[in-house]
Length: 114
Image 1 (tube, rainbow, N blue to C red):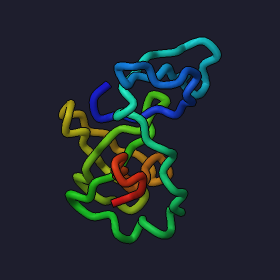
Image 2: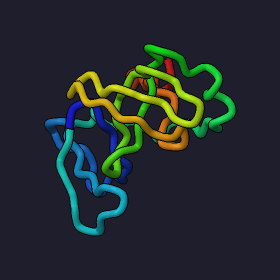
Image 3: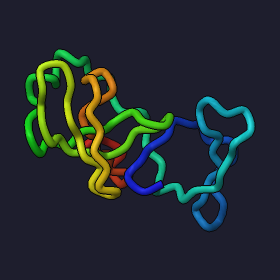
């Protein structure tokens, strides 16, 4: 699904087309063939206290929703929760900060965070 990331592991090496077979975390059987360019390592751990004070309107974050991480943008910061919007779907969610993390970008060509 566009704008989302799910945990998983590679179960079959890349094919000549550059695709790999992955098994999603939490599923013993759900596998899918995806382009290797859609893979990224797990983002580094960042504590809530490290990023919470920096969250303000238009900050890019990821929301844990439906067992995956979705690209969102902060719409409003409240005392105990943060309202975010998923731009890809124009959906708004108001959630506790524990359901959010900083958006992380990965450059597969250099194999490190830009």
